[in-house]
Image 1 (cartoon, rainbow, N blue to C red):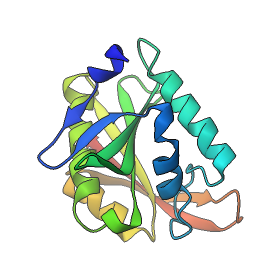
Image 2 (image 1 turned 60 degrees about the vertical axis):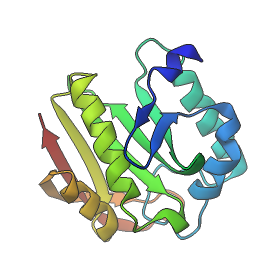
Image 3 (image 1 turned 120 degrees about the vertical axis):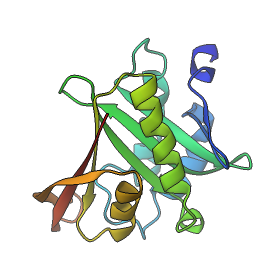
Length: 176
């Protein structure tokens, strides 16, 4: 637990802290939201959420986690999550975020993502941060643009495993 506490990040309005096993219900609430249909890797069932939370908490036990999963808290309440995942390319990280429906459109995703990007550059010595989104996901694209990320590839595609729906995908990059 002590090791995890050193990874807590605070912003003007938010606290980002490593995922803990007791976060299951709050994570399941936002991750299983049926209105979120343009995310590839969100757990939807209770079993998937339990596996996700167990994996995320176990990653934080490592001296160098490959995946850093954070919950985003506003006034002590979990309103979403942000992720920083180490890529195969040296010192590159993938950034992702999701907010509970009632927390969207208030700048929380941008604030949390910006704080995690700064953490990646300042603490992890990242050389670049990547983010992907469905090309129909204007809200996520706006977050990337607010972070100063640049569109690097607009030709990607993604197929959603549970529905078989195929869509275009954008990749944005932010370099140190």
